[in-house]
Amino acid sequence: MRTPERVATARVLWGSKGEQTMARRLHMVSTAIDVNSRCSVWGICWREPCDACAAVPQHYTLTFRGGTGKTSVRIARLLQDAKIPFLLASRRGEAAAPSGMPAVKFDWLDSSTFATPFQYGFPGNEGVSAIYLVAPEAADPASPMNAFVDYAVKEHGVNRFVLMAGSSAKPGGRLLGQVWQHLIDIGVEYCVLRPTWFMAVAFRTLTDEEPHNTDYRVLGPELLTYDEIAAKLSSCLGREITDVNLTDEHRAQRLMSVGVPEYFAKRLASLEVSAANGSENRMNDVVERVTGRPPQTFDEFAQQCKSAWE
Image 1 (tube, rainbow, N blue to C red):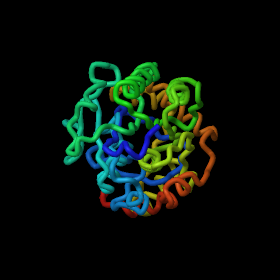
Image 2 (image 1 turned 135 degrees about the vertical axis):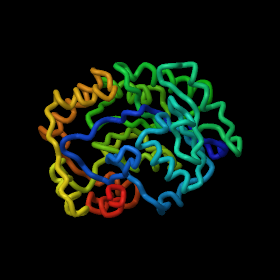
Image 3 (image 1 turned 135 degrees about the horizontal axis):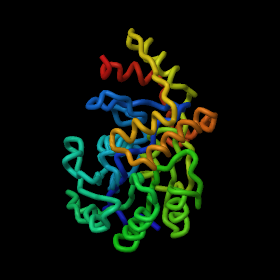
């Protein structure tokens, strides 16, 4: 367990470039814009440090697996604003990292890269205290992820992990359920995030003094379909935005056409079908309970970020 004496530590963010697809029926918390691709990326994106940032301890460092992914970069910005050391870890390393953010190369499927984040020279000689995990695009993500977790715990004393899973994940279940169960079995501090899309709750689960040791189904303040989102964007931008309704077969083919492996493309398409059938029609107050502030509505997001579409 972490003790007050472990004061020189760091946080690292790991994962893959493809962090789930958007469900057909969405719980919107907020949206950020990937300006390079001109497409929407769903997640929290606050421009200034919030009260929650100011309240967290300042002496830990985090590592992010999938460090250049959608959620990792945005959590890293919150950490940067809070002056908490962190490190991004991804297959492209510094080449893919935002300017001013430290990064190293890491590949879930290449165990020879597992040591690289721990060899990084933090300015204050910190070590890694917590790791944010995003799964690789692999048929069996649990095997390399559990192997890395064991390495981080046994060789470097890491004791806190935050796992980005899907809303349907269960401990001991398929895919990331096996990682969830492993975190429970080895007795580390952990939290499993189960969003319909990407949220800011991860920041608190990584930085709070007390471990959460639970899972959070992270949902927003609204239930919105793609058509409803298009209508809201049309109203905000003053021009017509339409949603092209794809079948699951067409969606899978589209994903495969841009390089997503067939098994993963079909899995993502099946999530859309499941959500369209009501699997994501639920709401809760997790965001406000964990972060201390209510989640943003989609209208608030659209007004905040409309310049990205203009």
